[in-house]
Length: 512
Image 1 (cartoon, rainbow, N blue to C red):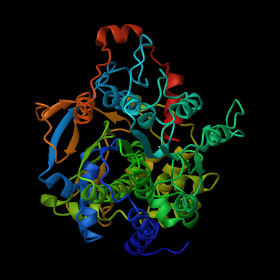
Image 2: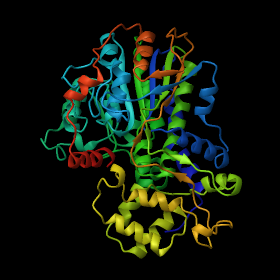
Image 3: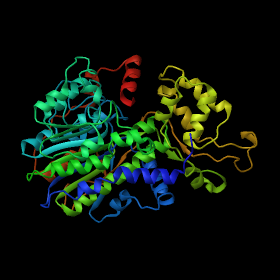
Image 4: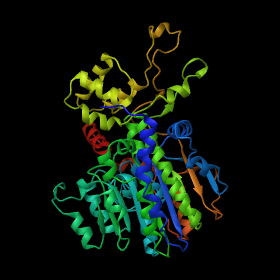
């Protein structure tokens, strides 16, 4: 496999993927739309944002849309607490429920309290007021972040049932991955959910080309992959994926055009969901590139808002993942920038692993070096081979660990001419310097950007709770509804904890 120049490959590939977005976006209705755009970087730690900004400046000679949005005079910046009723460390389900309902619930639950009480969501309330609602995501469209806004299920893993909930929610736009929960040949109950959506008047699109030709005359259901949409770095470098799976920016442009046709207003949730998965995998570069895709999507949204100023924009993350951190490198940290920019991957770990299955150590070494442009030792190749062929399991400190984490550790491990305990000279081979604390979610407060030309008389301090975002949206729309609340003690007494085996199964469903 021939190695290609990283910058040329990435930029040409990405611009090709985005080429049609401008044409579509230029056709957005001339009248001014009003509503809410809620952008989620799932598992989006600030370390990934920093890495993306550095790469954009050094490799692409660009300033990020995110940084410009933060500096905008109409933007307010907050930190939010993300804890759920059951833990200081949340998963995506209750975090998204907090935004959608203003109430906290336990991990894994979608807009329902542990006692079975359903919580009315911002989508449901907006639809009652005649507004159009929809979402686009790079995860499965039955995944936790979007599902919490239209489904009421105590178990986010019931995605076949959640797909039925989406049908009954009658949203105007739903786009992402997850064919396995809609195709009659994939579903356990053999029901053809596509036929049911079609009977309800939906236009169904399954490829990027079909999306570009959508009529906008009907509600849109777009399902572009069996599971989650591929990482951006894979869509850039694999022509087949790039032809089938659209970018988040393209889905967003289509969704904005469709939703803005409703003069009563709209709500659009946008999720860059695979930043979280890349961090789970300790895949520093895949996380950064999906963050780059999110940044391009923010650019699309800001262009829309420039023509439609009566829009509230919220940009945030549900939780941190894995403790993504750019580490100081070399004497006085003077090698830190060089180390960060040494990441040159042309594929995600997920993509590499598919090619490594059933291969010998020598071939695994060749695959890894081809896609990362980093030479590794036979012992390091053996490490990958060993963990590649082990059963995935929860191991050290309850961490879901192999084989991706091994690849992440190798890419941040520089090579020296001396033993580590006697280290005094420069690195013989300087690799990356992004380190991870685990493969799990983390509890640090998350960034919130609230952008609007309207004055939000919320009385909020700079440190808020994730439930406060529901209040901001309701205030903006003039909706008055307070959902029931539950205390932690009561929630924990009712919540059922997963067994060790059930937890492993959940992790497998969540990330795969």
